Amino acid sequence: MQTARSKTAGTDGAARARPGPGRDLAPLSAGAATAVAAVGAVLALTDSGSPLRGPLTLFFLLAAPAAAVASGLRGLDPFARVLVSLAGAVVLDMLVAQGMLAVHRWSVPGGIAAVTALSCLGLGLTLVHARRPRAREAGRQGT
Image 1 (cartoon, rainbow, N blue to C red):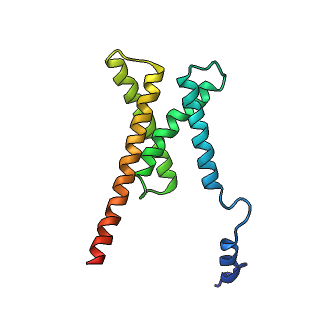
Image 2: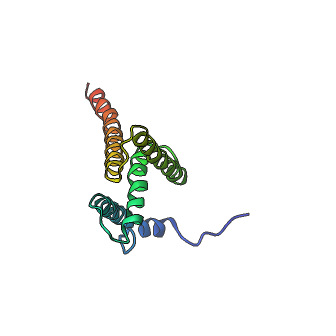
Image 3: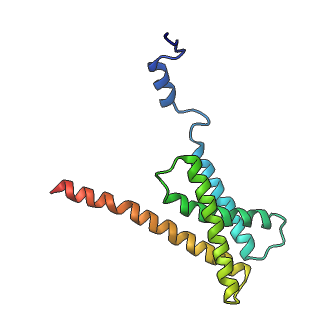
């Protein structure tokens, strides 16, 4: 038994190659998420009285470490990558909170700064590690 296809290979490829509205929303949504997270961090660090301070700070505390963890999980499928990176973000936030409470140095700005520093460190190490094998392969191909 054969199945009938409604699209031919030529029209399907042409539809994918054609730019249009809604095709490149991933970079736009990533930029919007970064801006929202940055506003949340700024609101928390300046001790603003805005009602958006709580939700935006919570978004920052989940998004920043999750982005750092997700950058190191390139081999997983997208759903598993999101789930593992959110779990890693919660673990990192809890470890920062427990560490600050253990040394009696708990403060909101200190927690935000610690999470920011650890997230930037994790993202930076992942990016450095991801670029290093390419440089080795290029060097080997040249010889």
